[in-house]
Each structure stands twice: as C-alpha cells, then as structure tokens.
Length: 250
Figure 1: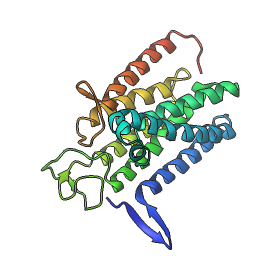
Figure 2: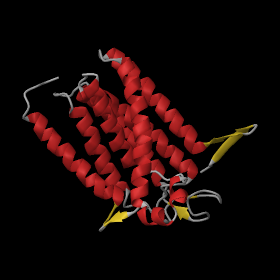
Figure 3: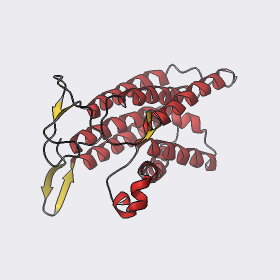
C-alpha cells in the first residue's frame, strides 16, 4: 500500500522491489542451508537460482506481452517498459531453465525441484506482499471488514474498498511452504514434493482468481492464470500417477 518506502539521496527504495529482493535472498539462503543438510550441492542451488531468476524475468514479461498482445501491437514500448509481469510465465521459464541446467550438469532435476519448491513458495509469499505495497493484483470491491482502501498513486483504484487478494495469496504461499517443508521429509518418491507444490499452487491460484479484479487477460470463461492453472493441476496429478508406477524410490 506504499509504492515508495523511503529515499536515500537520489536512490528510492520501492516496496515491491524490496519485497522481491528479500524473497529471492531468503529463497537462496533456505535452499543452500537445506541442500547442505540433505547432501545436495549448495553451488547447484545458487546456479539454479541465478538461471531461474533470469529466465523467470524474461518468461514473466513474455507472458505479459502475450496477455497484452493487442496493446503491444499498438504501442510495444509502453508494454515492454511497463511494470507488468505474469507470475506463471516466470515459474514455467524458471523451471525450464533449472531442467536444462540439471541436464547439463548431470544432476537429478527432481531432487532439486523437491528441495527448492518450499523456497520458491517462500519467495512468492514475499513477492505478494510487494504486490500489496504497490497495489497491483488487487481484489474485487467489498463491504467486508477484510477490505482495504488504497491511496492515490497505487496501481489499485484509489478510495475504493477492495479485497486484499495480495495478502490472501501471500498467506497461501507461506502456508504451502510449511506443507512442503513437512512433506519433503515424508515423501515416498523423488519428485513428490515438487509435484505437490504444482498441485497446491495451481489450486490456490485458480481459486484466488475469482476474487481478483485487475486486468489480467482471459481465455474463454477463465482468466489467463486460471486457464494455465488447469494444466498445472492436471500435470501434477498425472505426474503423481506416473511416479507411483515407477519403482525408483528416494
């Protein structure tokens, strides 16, 4: 709910950027600590994080361009220069980058997917707090006591009481993180924790979209993210079944 937190000379610290930065650092720190504890490579975690971030940034922007395709054709620079990103584009591109990295380094991708999925959820939780500070990803108008009013200058409509869907999403992401931390030590097969992340995030994202009211594109009766969520949920379920038929245990 506060785009600019403070300034130091010519440098202005933005709430969204700060929360993203905190989320990334916590994600990497948690991943490294857990990698060392579980006999995996800390260096690999750092490399995966770097390549995942770079690919994720490009993927999130690319999907935003696709969602805003008509506006992009009319004025490409305004779309490319905007602050718009689509989280799913970042997740998908980041995972693809991690798969390629692990293949090149002859590492088992699913081992690192299991390990890092909780860290990803942690980073997303902080990222959604950043969304709240910026006012993006806002919810529908409401008379509920849960509603918040954003000030002038926010990306959300000013002076209107709306649902703080950013905080709902953040709480859900942190909740997923705790579930995955517990599940990692109880998983029966490699890949199960990563697939559970896909399932839980997909379901949560599909549901929260019903409460959002920002412009985020649509595919038929679904928002763009809901449409993608259906495939993520289906993929997670299919992968669970596939691993259950596979005899290789952790």
